[in-house]
Image 1 (cartoon, one colour):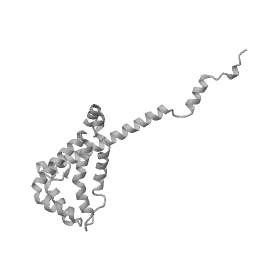
Image 2: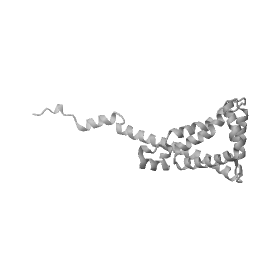
Image 3: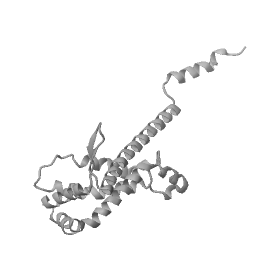
Length: 199
């Protein structure tokens, strides 16, 4: 006669596992979904900043800073305003080496540097918008606006503390995170070149 007391029903073991909570597979799926949401969030941030830089670059290119569309009116950062901001920051800063550099070189030759700024903003805007060379584009934009922020920060002028950091921090994140690999051309290039594509 067999000892049926030693037999454990298979359905009982399955019920125990089901009652114990989420499985390792469920956790991996949740982690993958969270990563996808995060990647899409960074892609949206990249596209938004791409629109900002591209629109300001277009304003400089066509030489128009104010727009009235009937329903809404707004301004963009065109060349005269960019020149004024650079001059205001350089003239008021106590960071003498950087202020002198801007006054003696950048502002004294603003015809050249204005054209350079226009091209740089257009290129960075397109790169961020379409997700190509994304991290390099973010670094480029940081190099354009960080000196202005530093001159305003180290000056006698009282300015709202977070005026520039609200731009700088997202751009710093975009310089670190390869956001162009989601909804961008960097994803295709990374798939083709692998680790040789650093963007």
